[in-house]
Image: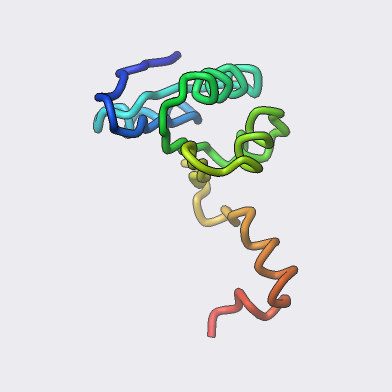
Length: 116
């Protein structure tokens, strides 16, 4: 299910792609929601964003953020007007570890993220 509310000229779109339970809260604050999307739907949304020229903040549930999407990889590598970030899964947020943690460990060592 998708809801595109559009955005006023000069404003970034806020796009949420994830499970219905997670996405519904964002719909209440006016975000464009793509609930229960699969990788194919994710690619279609990201391709549309890339082609539209709109600035956007894309909030992705972590399972989709790691699902192997060609458009996701492309936009992450380009940087710029489309910012993509992950949301922890609704049923188990405590199990969430952002992908950037792996990069930090690789650069700064295993001890870098330990609570101290």
